[in-house]
Image (cartoon, rainbow, N blue to C red; front, side, top):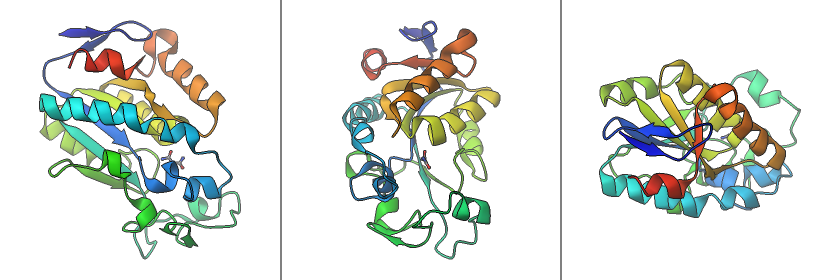
Length: 219
Ligand code: C5J
């Protein structure tokens, strides 16, 4: 068992049973001209996570450790889209309507794809989800159990939405969760900061936070 320097105290990294989870690194959230930017957000902080995450991804692949990707999006017929999600906030562009990178948050559209630098390798599971939490309505938990995974290393966007929802649910399901601070970002710097504080507060009530460099050094 190795120890990764982390908040609120070192993260115990076993030799087996650790998976890297890459949450929603989709063009629509990360790239200029996508869904995120069309909502008025500055995507710059999200783009800054790609290079450190690529290094972590390479390290997991080199070490032969499992990697799982997730994507947020809906069926082309929108049969899995709740009215509440479509209409919330009365957006000018709704999910399923044509946007700068195809139909917004629809599977198979250009904007729904994971950015090229972090594209899934053959054999790496991709979890398509209609919600924020990657366990909700998916087979993620079955895939993790089937591989004997007990420890999850989280990267992804956005910190306080899909990353936090998934990490909280994983924590409740008994996984030991580590979030890499430089491999996650929000459109809102304050939300990023406070989410990391919430996760590590009260002795790590949701899990641990570390940097990618400290993890890679031990992989
Ligand atoms: C959002 C996500 N922010 N992947 N999705 O709607 O965090």
